[in-house]
Image (cartoon, rainbow, N blue to C red; front, side):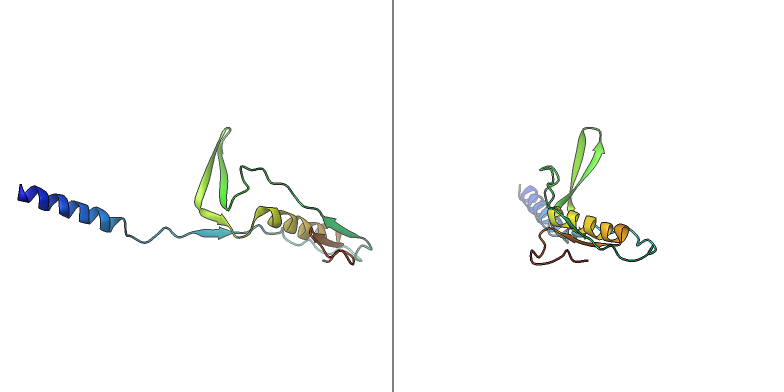
Length: 118
């Protein structure tokens, strides 16, 4: 009887210690712009502002959501966005448009007192 209690206690201690291992390391991601194309001439004389974006509730979360099938997604708990997608998406769109249009482009919200900034 004593042996079974000692064995149970040892197994419980081993299971407890196994659960105390190092936590899974989180990884953080950001969106980035494409490669800058070669400049084709003078800068445009107009400015562009990219407005706010709406993000579907399914992906409006810190974790990355990955589509793994036609009707199935996976939430990657340890893979997270470094900043909210609602601010990342317009920032990257504005940077890409600035490169493509060779114009001054800013993301919402912008300074209301002047032109859009590069």
